[in-house]
Figure (cartoon, rainbow over the protein chains, first blue to last red):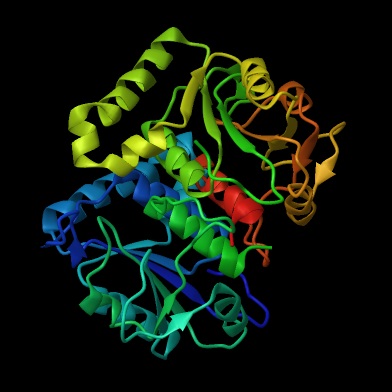
Length: 195
Length: 195
């Protein structure tokens, strides 16, 4: 399914909706945003990501996502925009973060190295620069890039990863750091896999 | 309003909805997508863009955008998410591309250098690499970065620019090149202004 990537490993993306913090710091399950399905599927497909895991434990949320993807992959959606159907062919709906790790292991025959992302630093998790991360992609181990929603992943969840990628910041401090997760995924994939 | 950017010029972003091509190549005016307002305002604010021009000639479309921005800048929206109100403070609604150029000239006292973006190449417009563009930002001339919607700007419109930035592509060809404009703007700003 995926084109051969010389000297480069398989990259997977997971977007989590649990356990997130809300703006008051409470632990919540967030709802799926429609354009998180579209934009992240399109960015993933553009940069050669092998699979995009949309992770939400709520059955109702999963059925909404299935309905949206079904529309674009059905004959009407496919006729209107075949590129969208193509991008959606790499989306997989899961309930739990641990299932994403297991799924990569099943597909690749080895556990992925998990890189968490966050707009803040977290104690007890090695920090990884983008430059170093891009270099490390030259080896053959699969990578799972994990993104949160809402006001970000809980610290407990972040510590499940092997490393935390540096926050995405401008060269000149702007005093504002609130990218949408769609923008953050796009930038992350470009930094790791862009030309 | 904007923090001083040492050795760096003022950058402006314009998102155009006319004259675009539709999927059949016809010239159309596209509708504003709600998350194009939010995501591009947030990316612009994060990367220190001075103003984000949302350009659409249709009065009805402008009034929808004003209503959305008004909601987030009103007391309810501001209480719920003050960061969104802050990002929206740099959004300006205009009717025509030429007004965006004039607006920058009014604010900066000189005409901006206009960099067009497209997923394809266009004859009669100098091509500019991202590396070169980033270097050029060290001078003091204001830059206007222009993005299209729908199936992209018409060739006539693209030729209004001073240069065309290279298409955003992955290091390893993926056979797919359909980023959302929200993702393209995020990547472009990161390439030009990211750390």
